[in-house]
Length: 371
Length: 89
Image (tube, rainbow over all chains, first blue to last red; front, side, top):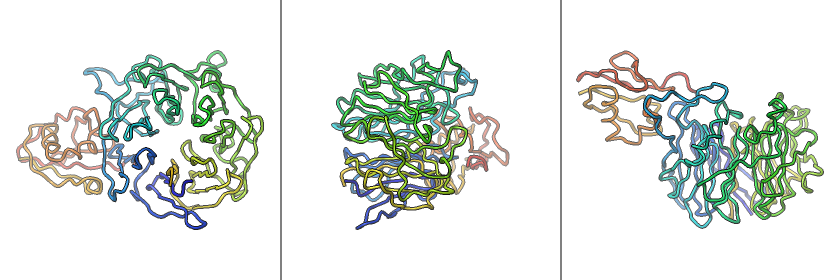
C-alpha cells in the first residue's frame, strides 16, 4: 500500500505523504523549476526527476535511497548531425531539432537489474541506461528505423515517446507509445522493433490512411502487470483495448466522452481501467464543467462516472497523459490537473479526497511503491 | 587572456565563476571553460555543440554572429558574457 507519491509540476517536484487520515504535501524539491517527469524506482528506491529548463535545456537528477541531496546525472543526447547535413524535417515540413527537447517517459527497465532505465524523449528517441542514469545509449534500431521518419508531432510540435511498458514476463519485451507513431514492440531487448497498433483508427486522416498503424496518435499506453496480454490505449480520438498482447486493437466509444490523455489499468485485473475524459480534442475541458473519472470493470462494455469528492460545476481541470497513477494494490489512485488540483482515492475511485487545488500545473504523478 | 562571465541565473543550477582563458574563437574560449567546469557545458550548448536556442553570448559588447559554429574571433583582452535571452519561458 503506497503512502507516498510525487507530483511533477511546472514549478517543482511535490512530495505528498499520507498522515493518519489525510494526504498532504510534505516537501517540495526544485521549487520554481519545471519538473516534467518523475520516476520513483521500485528496484532500488532511487527517485529520478527530469527538469526542463527553458534556457538551459533538459536535465536529469537522481536522489538515491537514504540520500539527502540530489545529484545531477547524464542527460540523454541525440547523435551528432552528420557534417554538412541539412536539418531533418517531419512529413509536414517542420524542422525537427537534433537535441532533446523533453524527457517524456522514464521507466525501470529490468526488475533484476537495479539502475537499468528506459527514457523516451521529444523528438522521438528511446534511450537506455544501465548505470542509474550515469550514461545513456540511444536505441539505434528504433531511431534508424525508416518508419520512424514518418512520425509527426501530435501532443507537441515534434514526435515523441511518452509511454514505455516493460513486460512483467520478460524485460526484453518492451512496448513504446508514440505521439504520433502508434505502438512499437520489441521482443529482443530493443535490437529489433515492429509496429503493433493494428486496429486503431485516426479520424484526423483521410479514410484511406486512417487505419495506418504508424499515424495513430496514442496519448497513453498501459499494460496490465497481472494479465500482461491485456492492454489499454487512450488515443486522440478514442479508447482502444487489446486482449491479445497488443497484436490487435478494438475501439470503444465511451460516454460522456472518449477523449482524454490518461489511462491506468488495475495491476491484476486487465478488464478494470480508469480514464479522465475531456470533452473533445477541439474542447479540452471537462464535459459540462464536471470533473469525473471514468471506470470500467468489464473490459470496456460499461463505464461508470466516478464523481464523489470531485467538483461538479464550473471546473476546467484537464489531466495530462502522465497525470493519473494507480498503486500496486489497485486500491489507491491519484490524479493531478493542469489547473493545479490533486485528488486521491483509496477505494478504487469510489470517492476522492482533495490534496490541493492550488498546485502549479501537474505533468506527472507517481506513487512510491512498497511504502 | 579573455574573460568569460556567466549570467547569475545560471548560478542557481551550476556554479560558473568568472574565468580567464586563452582562445582565438568563442568556441576555443568556451572549451577552455568546460575543461575546468564540465557540468556547465550542457547548460549553455546543446548536444550538437551549438548555442542553446534561448542563450546568448556577448563578445566585447556585441552578440556573437555564429551561434552554431562559435567562430567569432576573440582577442586576448576580450570580454565574453554568457547570458540568457528574454525568450524561452
